[in-house]
Image (cartoon, rainbow, N blue to C red; front, side):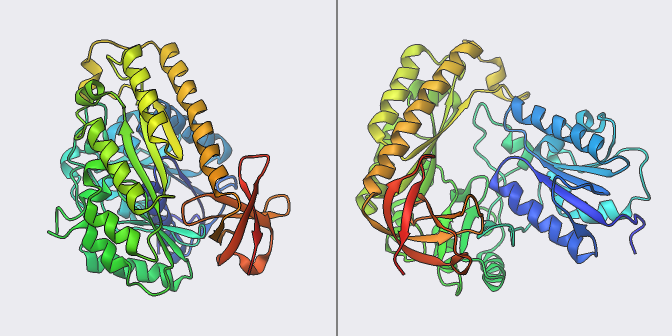
Length: 435
């Protein structure tokens, strides 16, 4: 029996899909132990926060959430883990009401650490040294949504000039393919139809086992019960022809790619210490479209990196306008303590970065609208989710277009043939179910 007798526990996740898969696995540990999982807005005896630290804003968001939970859950045990906990454990421990801070290496032990506590007292800190980041926490999300996030890889060896992930997550590592196939089979047994393959640097899969990412995809493709796979994000230099050829030929792997660019200026890419040029990126986008003309392509971009001139930004804008992706995920540069970019010259004023974000966000709106308009009048397969809003349900096509249709409970978590009829007032496509 655990020493701590509380039974109600809620969970709060900030940041990436990897964090969501890990939080879901931690939550199942608590449920298996007899605890009652309640919603994030419900009062709880234990609050678990899985944090992000990708930007200064993310750190601030984490601190504000912790303080809010302390206020709204008087006397609750507050346990904090994740990348912000890994990088700044003492900063978190200093927040009044925090009981437990656990780094990423011991994240899978959070349940046992919580149940071993006798109650509130001195803050306990575990495994927040970068030297300890060697374990792999096998995890996947389940029962949270129609799609499951399957963690296949952790850590990164790239050490880009602006990024703290190698310090927060450690070196690239993974489980053997056989273990991950077994995880996918558990997801299929629970009735979920789609898996999003997640990792910090997914295409770098295999460093610890001598296997390849393409080998992993081929084996996952054989799992009965999973009808769709998506690759959450992959570096352009790791998006090989072998991977593209397999994806294009597979019935299960969807024509959907999220590829980080970060800048359309080669001089900025060089200072960022990225491992490709704009020519290489352009060549990879062309390779995708040659095989899958209507693929959804999302691109990450950072603006305001030290030394980014007006000319560099205009080059980036023009490059993205030429590429015509379906979506842009735009970030203003955020200084991260301990990274080389902190000491770079040529700081870009916040107001300039904000204006550049605005311009690319407007471009994104135009690009996404164009991508959706091309689909009007076509038929597609849509996996509908359980969300109910104003009499409608929604889901995604193979190439990640959000489609809404009148709610029908029997069609939730099922793939339906749909005519893409028109664009709704919120930018989604209104679909007519055909079967």
